[in-house]
Image (cartoon, rainbow, N blue to C red; front, side, top):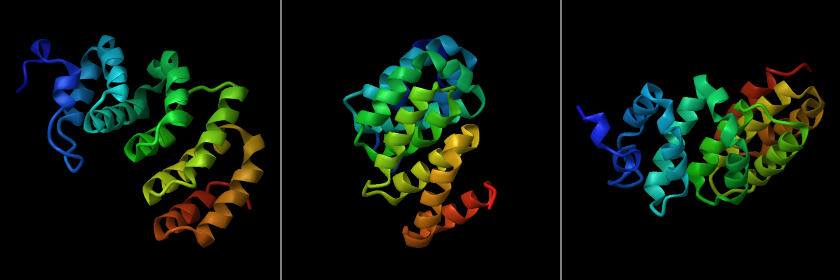
Amino acid sequence: MIRRREVAVRDLLAGGDRRSNRQANEVLDFIRADVRRLPALMDCLWDEDACVRMRAADALEKFSRDQAVLLQPFKKVLLELAAESTQQELRWHLAVLIPRLRLTKLECERAVEVLEGYLSDRSSIVKTFAMQGLADLAEQHSALQPSVTELIQRLAKTGTPAMRARGRKLLGRFPK
């Protein structure tokens, strides 16, 4: 067991390669035990090490599943990072994290723009999670439902196998 008081968040995420999640789940527990450490995790999203960034995004996305309200102070920088990032692991985690935040109309429009841009990514995972994020936003903002439904219908026919499967699942959430 790691002695939590002696270890920095970044140290827990460093090392190994992209196939290793390292200690992202332990970092998640570490942050949940003391949310004052959340800024340290956020800082890791801009780390020079791509593996640290990837693991920080993984822990943050998991944190957002039940504690998204605590990420509200960071929503502007998260939206900016989502728009700027080219790293696929950051993109796929941010694609599902961003819709969990309370967004203004303008922020929501920006998020839609970013996620639609992700649909051109090389990574099928990024594209699939972008579809998920768009559907999540459309569920919260009914004005988005017609355009998002149409987009998902098209991608459910033309996308990768993962996109087609996710598209069929997502279409079940919206009225015909």
